Image (tube, rainbow, N blue to C red; front, side, top):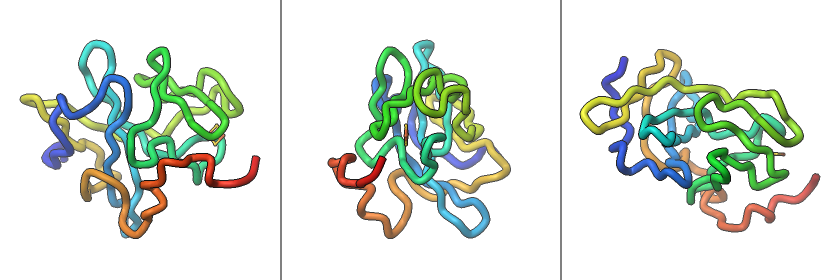
Length: 139
Ligand code: FES
């Protein structure tokens, strides 16, 4: 625990997110790193609390507005420190947290529930690289 390096702290953008993949048992799941204004880093699974198959970061960083992460689908906003939805269709819900710790300028996975797999998207899902989040139909 705490020995799986994800990325350097400086690689985590203040105005976006850094996508990485963890394994939960045999299943790969995506997660995001977020940088707070004090330079510390938090992490949550990369799935909106409104429609949980919708990813916040589709490979190019989730948008951040006024310090909150924004879901592109229906514009729910989530606090970067707590993951709580402050506005939108899932207001009050909380993103699934992933424990991380920073040490000597690097971010490490520190969560017994997950194993670090890689930075970037999960395997076999090239749709994640789509730059057109509106391509998925249905409201
Ligand atoms: S799917 Fe994220 S706000 Fe609706």
